[in-house]
Image 1 (cartoon, rainbow, N blue to C red):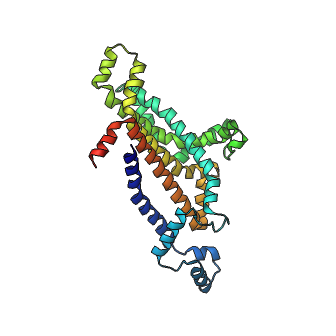
Image 2 (cartoon, helix red, strand yellow):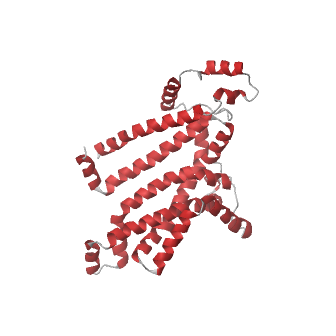
Image 3 (cartoon, one colour):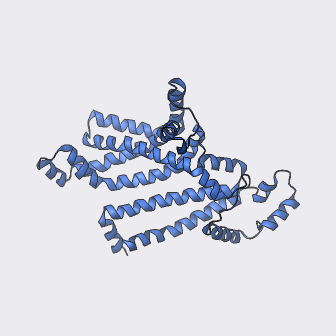
Length: 319
């Protein structure tokens, strides 16, 4: 197991290097530069050149890149030009709302999708199956922001059950926190629910007609036990993969939802950073989200090895 974990971690190093290069190049090759952003539109070329010289922005780009990577590894992700605070501190302040939204959206997605997928597979070919598949296709097709606007109008403006926008931290109480987060979570989680339900359905169909399921039914086991203990357990690996990937997508996809519902998360932070061209914050947030996404996928890979020992055996055979 230890060698499996080490191999998985080592395989991520080239990915992270390429991504870090891309992040650095994109932010530094855009028109203007940190010096122009710091000094503003009224700055003269002489002032820009002086600042570039003093801060090392005129060095070769590969030197700046390695300097940035070394500082990142040491925990120095730079300082925000406009917020006058370390980038890591700004990320820490804005991460809590994003994490809460992503977790709630993931719970919404799992709660809606897994039972629907199992039931659709069990009723394969029926009118109910067709209806559920059509609804999941609609869930994939509808944009999250459009669903969010509908939820705001219906539950916030028309029924007045929930606040239209805003945010209440967990310190104000769980119920108050959920009042503000449930609509964004449904808006964000619905698309992922549609994807997970389709994977659950196809994965369950793949095992429901195998011999061991027929044997379990021939023994007289209850249908719910056959479905949940025998079929779902063996169909869970691809579903787990999709859930892991969807969590990464929820974190990155939260930008639009946070903006729509006025939630002070990473989405608002990076939108403000882009509009102000605060390059150090842009680099930091994109790198942080990338690390989070990679970490989630690594966790899913490790769970694969725990749930299915054949995965480790295949890895060992492959060298």
